[in-house]
Length: 171
Image: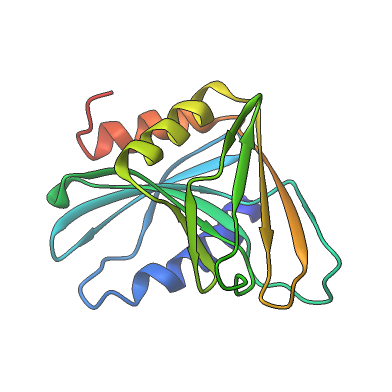
């Protein structure tokens, strides 16, 4: 439950900034992932999130680190993967995700966040996350510090089903 509270607190701040957003409600905890739901002015929003099991790099201070997958049915937007690095990425930084034998290097970074470059890339990434056991994200901070964050994908598929069911996405 502590993981849920910490993650909820970090994510609540980023989502509550939307003027008409309701407070996120936990749909459930699934392994190392937590599924959430809230309503904004456009309608329901469902997302799932996790924090890394291990974060590595020669840094002295780092903010919150987490990965989120979001569905916004009112915008016909599903499977949007967002990585929060806990630092500002280096300009033109290469963010690389490894899941099993697959490598995803089609991401772009802005500020402290990274996203896949297209809907297709998001969907491929989510499919790999459903099948994988762990996900490793490599990034570089604005100060040149290389980082390696290792996430467990235990519970990913169950959390994904929960947000898909709540937000009406057909799998």
